[in-house]
Image (cartoon, rainbow, N blue to C red):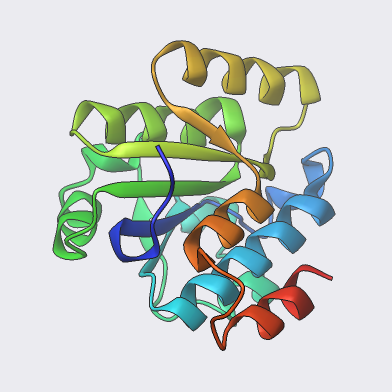
Length: 179
């Protein structure tokens, strides 16, 4: 299934100040997430973000927080779809495709993605915008999610599928975004 901007919502899961420094490849995952947020905002794709127990783990890292169109939503469940406020926010977008980025891939990101599938969303993990402390956990999360019927994509796949064609005025800015 091709990703469509007018059907998508970007969900940024738990890219937090005390967690990010321990994530393998965090810098790359954060960079790809920033690209996704910029592309989403540019094309009118809703962006939601979560924070797991922010009083303990800290808020969203500033470089992501500065790009978010709305404050992150706090949660205690690993699966964000078990939080009524977050599930309501997803439903309010009117979108049926959820693109996920964030940390940790094998815990909150995977459980939220599986929850989204369970609620009837077409969910996709953005492989280059997620991370775990141990890369093996990230890799197993991707395999498990695919085996459960979810999609695994990259940030460039998402951006180019959202864009859809090269004769749009957004094409050149998107090329700059990717470089």
